[in-house]
Length: 427
Image (cartoon, rainbow, N blue to C red):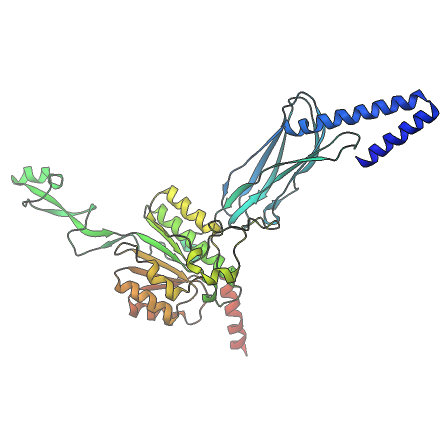
C-alpha cells in the first residue's frame, strides 16, 4: 500500500511537470484498479463457502478419506485462491492438501486427501487456510479459515486368543445355590405346583399328562456384570518403555470390552488415567494433533480431579462405542496408585460383579487389594501387562487369595525378557 501510494504520487508529479496525457491515463487506470481491488477482495473472501466431510471415528489402522469442497457463491469469478489444510504428522498419509485454484461464478472445487489411524487418540483436523488476493499484488493477501474438526481413533481390538487369554474367561453367568436367581434359559425339570408359583412357569403338557398342575424348574444362576478396572498410574509400571506398556494395557482393555459386548454381556470401565478432553485448557499440539494435557505437577497436586467418572456396566454396541471413545482419549499419568485406588473405585458396583483388573504386575500389594475385593463380594481377575519370569508364583498367590491371574505381556516384550535368560543359560 505504501509503495503504491508513493508510485502514484511520483507519477502525478511527473505528469504535471511534463504535461504528458499518457501518464495521467496510467494514473487513472492504476487508481481504478486499486479502488476496484479494495472493494472486491473483502466480498470475494466472504462469498467463499467451504466444508469438510469425513468419518469422525476410525479404528486403528484404517485409512480415512477427507473431502473438502470450496464454492464461490459470488457473482464475480475468483482469479486465484490458495487452499492449505493443516494435518498432524501422525495422521499424514500421502501428499498434503496444498493447492491453488481459480473459481468461476457459482463454481465448486473439491479436494480429497487421506489420513491414516496410526495411533489411538482424539485428533484435530485443520484448520483449512484460504488465501486470495488481487492479480497485481497491490493489496495484501486476505486470509480466511475453515474451523478445525476432530477425529477419534479407537484402540486396536485384538481377539482374546491372540492375547493369550482363554476365550471363555470366568465371567458372565455363574452357578448359584440361591433359588432366588433362576435362569429361564436353563431348564432343569418339573415339580408339583406350589402356592405362590407363577402361572408362566406351569408346564401344561406335563400337567395334562399327570392330571395335576406341574411347574418348570430352572438351574439357579446369577447373570453377572463385568467391569474393566484399568490401571494407568505410570509409577506402577517398571518394565522397559512405560508408554508402550500402558498403550498395550489400553488395547487389552478395549479388546476385552469388545469381546464381552459381542457375547451380549454387560461391561463397564473404571480407570485412574486422565481424560485430556475433560480438563483441556491448553488445546491441541500443532505437531501431533493430540490434546495437550495439564502438567504432571498439576495432576499430582489434585489427581482425583483429573480421573474420569466410571462408565457403569451396560450392554449393546452404543455402550461399547462410549467405552472405546474414552479409551481413545485416556492417558497414563501420576494420578492414584492402584493399591490406594482399586478398592474404593469399585464401591459403586453391584454385588458379584466380575472385575477385570488390568495392571502392571501381580505384586503382593496388588494381590492383597484384589483379595479385599473378593471379601467384598466381587469376582476379580488379575491381568498383568509386564513380562514376569516368576509369574507362576503370582498365579499361585492369586489362587490362595481367591481369584485367577493371567499374564498378557506383548510378544516383543517377552522376547526381550527371554534373550538375557537364553544368553545366561548358554554361558
